[in-house]
Amino acid sequence: MPSTRFAPPTEVPGLAARRIAADILDGVLHKRRTLDEQLEGAAAHPGLKALADRDRALMRRLVATILRRLGTLGHLLSRLLDRGVPTDAPRAQSALLIGAAQILWMDVPDHAAVDLSVRLVQSDRRAAKYAGLVNAVLRRCAREGQGLIDEVRSEALDIPPWLMARWTVHFGESAAKAIAAAIGHEPPLDLTVKTDAAHWAARLHGEALPTGTVRTALQGPIAMLPGFSEGRWWVQDAAAALPARLFGDLKGRRIADLCAAPGGKTAQLAQAGADVTAIDRSPNRVARLRENLGRLSLDARALVADAVEWQDDVAGGGFDGVLVDAPCSATGTIRRHPDVAWLKQEADIAALTTLQNRLLKKALALLKPGGTLIYCTCSLEPEEGERTVAALLASEAGVRRAPVSAAEVAGLEGIVTPAGDLRTLPCHLPRDDPKLGGLDGFYAARLTKS
Figure 1 (tube, one colour):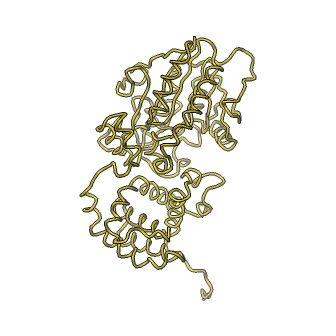
Figure 2: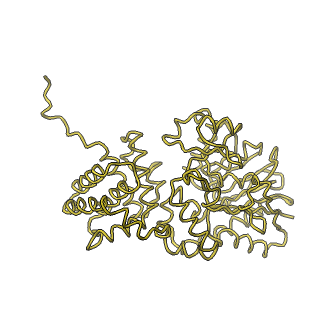
Figure 3: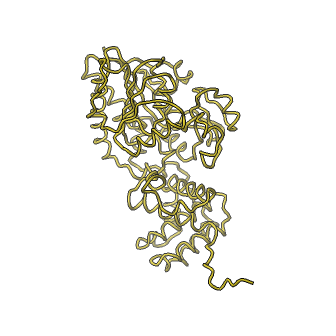
């Protein structure tokens, strides 16, 4: 019988996923690193490669759940800890968050959630002394946690106060609460399909939304879903799919897509028959855009350049249309990117609006007389949407708004503003099952140049 005397110890199942989740949480909350950079690309967590698909999905859901419920978790732990969360050992804080999130919102047995959090703390030199504390607090959480949350049930706990205050002023108290509630739910998977939305909705066990997007609650690796490898669809929130459609008929028209990566809108424009020039300043993001277009068998000219400085090198007097999906605070995407709520600050908005104004001026310079400019942001903040466009219209006599009609957005009147712009909120498109409802928060305006 072979000896196992020197066999390496086997790690407890699920501990690696939770260790990586703790590392990524620390990256967001203490090092201000985005989820995207920690989960994908060259700077991704090195341990991800060794995780099985199931553990990777668990880790992602765990991190997202904690960030969506961070305010509620903070309130809960403040009630369960006499001296507050330990500040000298970040791993102890992460272990408490991970354990409590599993106990309260995930399909994990309480004893497993407690045991794995304790092991997580024991494996860290600085945090090991808190193993008994973590064990006691999480056991108490299993007994009393839901009741303590019910006492102060408020979606506003999970939104930074500065954001909640802004949304209340801009949209009203009722809408602000509805936005916060929608953000608290894990969003569905939205897909833009090349053709036959009804077929792909049935194939993917979802539904075809009125706007043409296919929505499904399927989970797991995207690349394993039917139609991915054949290039039949791409991932794109239903709200994000609307701005490119505002151009109307695109066959044979020359369109510039500024700040184009990762390429969802570029793919829409190319699929609609446009001659597309897609520009982005990030080489890695342009490489990803080209990869996506290759999978979809769509053609576009993809360039690495700063859109503000770029000069069109094709003769012909400019573009028939320009799409500006401007860099922004991205507060409309918090339900899909919950780290945004805790990484962005109110002071960031002023610098972003300066860039947005420069991009709009550049877009006008690239546009032919009579051409169409679509300006959009995935922000809920008026400085990055309504006010930016109002300032442009006031300063540029040769620019006018071309109002969007409800008929252009599948009759969804609630997402068209009185001025004729597009404004979607996370609480729009509600469903009985909140995990199948909602939209990203988007603003879009259609302008023409005389």
